[in-house]
Amino acid sequence: MKTITSSFIILLLSLLGLKAQEQRELAIGQPGAIVDLRTSEGTAIVKTEWRYSDAHIVEADFKKPGPGKADPLPLYPTGGKLKTHDIHPKAGAADFDDSKWEVLDPTSLEVRRGSGLLSFNWYRLSVTIPEKVGNMSTAGATVVFEIVMDDYSEIWVNGKLNKTFGQAGNGVASGWNARNRVFLTNNARPGEQFKISILGTNGPIADLPENYIWVRSATLDFYKEYPSNPDWKGLGEVVFFDKKLNDVLAADVKIEKLADGFQFTEGPVWHPDGYLLFSDPNANVIYKYDPTSHNVSIYMTKSGYTGTDIGQYHQPGSNGLAIDSESRLIVCQHGNRRIVRHEKKGPVTVLADNWNGKKFDSPNDLVLKSDNTVYFTDPPYGLPMNYADPNKETPHNGIYRIKNGSAELLSTDLGGPNGIAFSPDEKYLYVGNWDIRDIWNTKTVWRFPVNTDGTLGKGEVFFNFNQTDVDEAIDGIKVDMAGNLFVSAPGGVWVLSPEAKILGKIIGPERPANMAWGDDGKTLYLTAHTGLFKIRVKTGGKIAGSGLTFR
Image 1 (cartoon, helix red, strand yellow):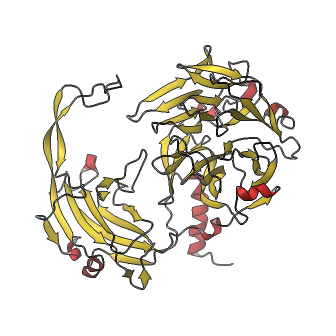
Image 2 (image 1 turned 90 degrees about the vertical axis):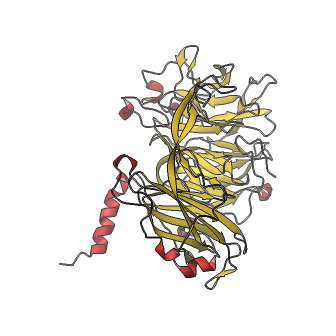
Image 3 (image 1 turned 120 degrees about the vertical axis):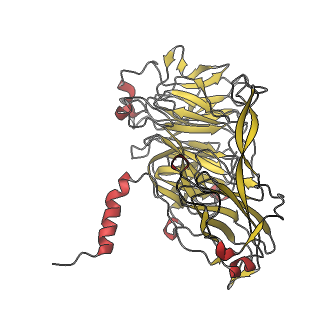
C-alpha cells in the first residue's frame, strides 16, 4: 500500500473545497526586488524616514441630513446642526506638515503605540525611487507599497485615499491584520517621489482588544513586469476571412485570460475611474476587475434579486450594465424585473419596471444613446420557466427605451432580443436575436434605423447565423469606431463589417457572452462563462459614460 503524502492531502482538500470558496487571494510570482522599510538599510535605499503621531478623537460640528442643491432627498449635510466626532490631525494630505512629528527608528516599528482600546495613529514617509534596487534597474518598474498593520490600516498616496464601492484593501482597510497593498506606479522613474500616509486603527471596533497598534511588516515591492499566470497568455486564435480584418486586429493578436472561477460572466462595462464591472447573474453579484492590481473583488452583492423564492431562479442577478454621463451605474435586474440606476449618494432609482402596468420579463442588455436615453431588451430568460413562466405578463418580448420616466415599446419583431448596440453615428440600432423555442432558425442580428425622435424604423435581418451547426446563442454585441460589429455568436466572437460581410472570427477558450470597451478604448474585455478575458483591437470603441472615442 502506497503512502499518501501530506501535499496530496492538502491538494485534495483544496479541490474539494473549491466550489464552496467565497473569496480567494492569490499571489502569483514574486517581485524582482524588495525594500524592507523596517530596516535602516531599506529606508536608506529610498531616502526616507518614518514619522509618527498619535491621532485623537475630537468633538466636531456637523449637520443633519438634508436636501442637496439639485436633489430633494435628505442625503447631504445641509440640515440642522449637531455634535459629532472626528479624527485629528488629518494627515493624509500630500503637503501636510509633519516636521514636528516624532522620527522613528525603522527597527522599532513593532513597538506598541497608541493609547490602546479605541485608538488611532499616523505613520508617514516620503520615498524616492532609486535607480537600482539590488541588481534591478527600477526604470519602468511596477512599485507596490505593502503594509500589515496590527490591526487595520488606511493608506494615502500623494494625498489620495483610493475609494471605490465594494472595495477591500488597495488603500482602505482590507481586514483584520491583513496585508494592504497600494500600487504606487506601473512605470517608475528614478528620482520620483511618493508621499505615503498610513492611519493605524486598533480593532475590531465593536470588540476592542486589550492591545495597541504596531506594524507587522512594511515593504516596497519592485516588479520588472507585474506577474501573471503564464498559462493565461497567448490564448485562442483569430481566423481571418477578409483582408480588411487587418485594419481591425493585428495578425498575431491573442486573447489573455484575466480571471476565472465564476459561474457565468455577463454584462461588462468600463467605469471612467479605471476599472471594469461585470455581472454574474447566476451568483447574483457584480464583480470589479482592477487592471492595475489585477484583482477581482465583489463590487455589489444581491445585484438583481432578494426574493424569498430565489431558489427557483437560475439567473436571478444582474445582467447588462451601463454607465451614464454622470458615471452612475445602470443595471438590468433579472429577478426584480426592472432597470435601476445607482445614485452616487447610495439610493437606487427605479428607471422602469413595467410596460403599460405589466411587469417586464427579465431585462437582459442595455445601451445608452449619447443623450443618456436607455434602450434595452427584455427576453424571458431570467424567469424560472422562460416563455412558459406563469408570471410572464407581457404578450411579447420587446425592445424598449425609457422616455419621460416610463418604458416605450419600440419593437416586438424579435422572439428573443438579447445584445444591443448603436452604430457610431447612432443612425442604426443593432439587436441580437435567439429564440430558444426555435433555436435553429432565429440566430440573427437585426438592424433598425433610428428616427430623429429616437424611435425605431422598420427593422430587418442584418446577418443570419442560422448556417452555423451549433445551438449556441446570439448574445452580446459591440461596435467599433469603424462601424464593425463584434457579435457573440456560435463558436466565438464574429467580426462583421458595416455592410454585413464576415471579416473574421475570434475563437477563445470559452465563448464570450458579452463584451465591453475599456482601458484606452482599444481593449475589448470579454465575459465568457467561467472566465474574464481581453483582446486588443486597433480600431477601438467608445468608452461607456465618458463620451470619449479612440482611433
